[in-house]
Image 1 (cartoon, protein in one colour):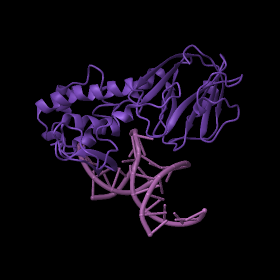
Image 2 (cartoon, helix red, strand yellow):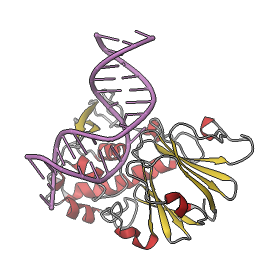
Image 3 (cartoon, rainbow, N blue to C red):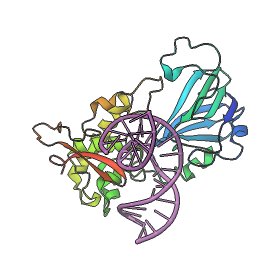
Image 4 (tube, chains in turn yellow, red, blue):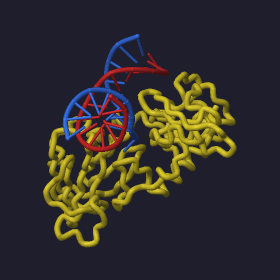
Length: 272
DNA sequence: CTTGGGTCCTGTGCGC
DNA sequence: TGCGCACAGGACCCAA
């Protein structure tokens, strides 16, 4: 999309998780995309109009890239299949001057889009309270210790809280805690510094490996080329309920519990 | 202030 | 085969 001009914006329903901003189609039409970037789980698309298109994929959202004209050519798989008519759950369709169509498709509609002044982005309600990037310099064990100090919520919930660290989801929190040997039920404020010293590089490792593997495809997730991610094949805890723990010499099995309404997978024997 | 539960939405897979 | 229930990569909102 970078450098491309949006020639047409088809907003096919009034909302996703929230109502779309006023006149979104008009404000997008004719705009040139200056660059794409990311903050936390938000895709940010800076436009030459001085506005930024903010996109969240939620649970089931995806951006589908297809040629606007021509046949399927060497496009691989059903995901990339050529279509002119919008398909089910295609909510926003952007046609670019270079002949590319970008379609936001989101079955569950937990995704979001907003269009705000680029200058005001840091103050935006969804952005302002985000914690540091887990792969950035602002995330280290000193920061984490200070942030968790006095917290009574379980560590699992704290790591999922985007105000503590932004970008971790359910899978990667479970995997990180398993690797670090930390029980997800441990109270955040009662975890010693040496344990946090160990946890932080593990979180970075898990994310780095998952990104290299193209993410985790449980169902909807695809890489930008349409391929499945394959980090799900490397899960040690997530989704492995009642299977053998993979920690060396551990005789335990993976349990599933529910914390803050989300499934947590862990080994009660080697995670303490 | 913090914390936990309910909620939004659609689709799928399972037990009965 | 049909029906109801549980569950799914998120995260806001509000009651306690």
